[in-house]
Amino acid sequence: MNIYLIFAIIAVLSYFIGTINFSRIIAWRSAKQDITQLGSGNPGTMNMLRNLGFLPALLTFLAEVVKAGVCCLVCKIILEHTGYAEYATLAYFFAGAFIIIGNDFPVFFHFKGGKGIACMVGMFLFTPLWWVGLIIFVLLAILLAITEYAFISSFGFIVGMSIAVTVHVFTHSIPYAIGIVVIVWLLTILAIIQHRGNLVRMFKGQEHKAHFKSSIKRFFKRQKGVEEIKEEHVESAPENEIIIEDDEKNGN
Image 1: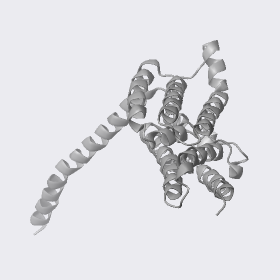
Image 2 (image 1 turned 30 degrees about the horizontal axis):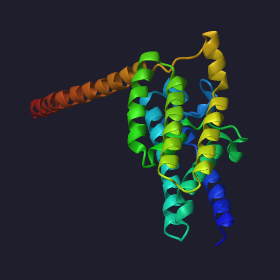
Image 3 (image 1 turned 180 degrees about the vertical axis):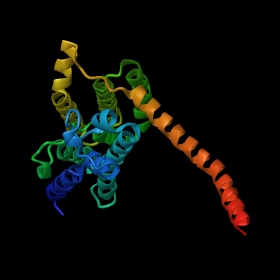
């Protein structure tokens, strides 16, 4: 099969996989809500966090990360085992690019989608540089907890990983390194453009905070409340049974 045809197939399939938006699915399944009608209207992790809480946001983030990472990895593995190994890494990031485009501009939702951050995280975390990604991710998670500005942490991760990938592909003589670097940095520019509203609000001092810590606290308080209710119910159950039995005895 012609390599151009292979990349065309990757582009089409990756795009349509990218249009699968887990924030819409999870918001509807968990709360019967349309996430695009809540808060900022953005079908993404942060809007889920602000409006539906920690657990739906976490599930959305993980689903988008896995969606992007697995799709990219499958494309790479297929090319490695079909005689096109030299194109494998390029195909990986090429697939990632179209997943992100599908996520950001889904044809089924009038080209109004998310901002692609979770998909970019997935694309980066499924590379050999996953360990660099985890280090950066942990550091920026701490920064998020301190500043409560999610997009700053997002930019830090994306730029940091873009630099790491650039260094890696050139120092390891990866085939088509220039193409890979161009893809990665174009995606970084796209992410900045998608967050232009956040940047404007930031400079004006009007940027909304993620309320990350308060969302986590509410989640664990809710879980604790559920456990207390369950314990109360269990403790009261035997007493009720005894009362019923006593009544039956008195009736006799």
